[in-house]
Image: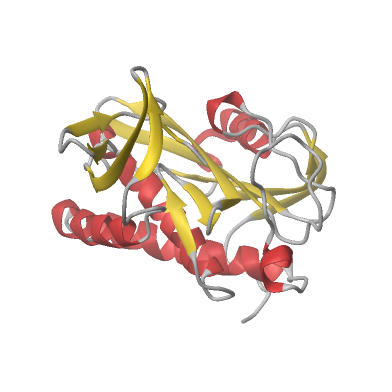
Length: 254
């Protein structure tokens, strides 16, 4: 694999947040900023994840990057497809190095019961379509120990027992990402989205058996039935009742 980039790459030593940096850059440059322009950082002072959480990362050890795309071909009601494509591209790149990588709904990347990657997607709508999408990724690559109170972090180094070339890994992820987005733009939505839904479903964390969850009504055990095209997570509890959730309405108990 060549290390030559096929997308614009802005490499920073440190920044508050690669998502924030890229968002501000987009505001200044507007349509002049090329699709898949990527901002990476050796260190983030205020990296953020889902639910407003911070993201622990030792300086110079991991992949912290954001990229921008303009998926105007996609209706806003189909925006969950972006989350599926991004998580699949990362999961498939990591699967070259070890088995047991999976996607914890909606888009965390896990290895067995531990979190190796977090994804934050921020969409800007243009009418009924998605005008701009900035996707931020924090991937634990060469960090050997974690000191925050995060419950279950793990790195690729801890999984494989060896350090990895972060630049090569970034190239592989972005190559897969660009291929997915090109297909999404060129192929009919129903056909492509159905294929992605199958791949995503097969990659889900705890996709077999009953596991503990918690919602507004309390703790329960359930199995995964499906994920709807709009991102709704559908479970079946031990009484046979279907339970459907949007993001943040249910939590895995780890």
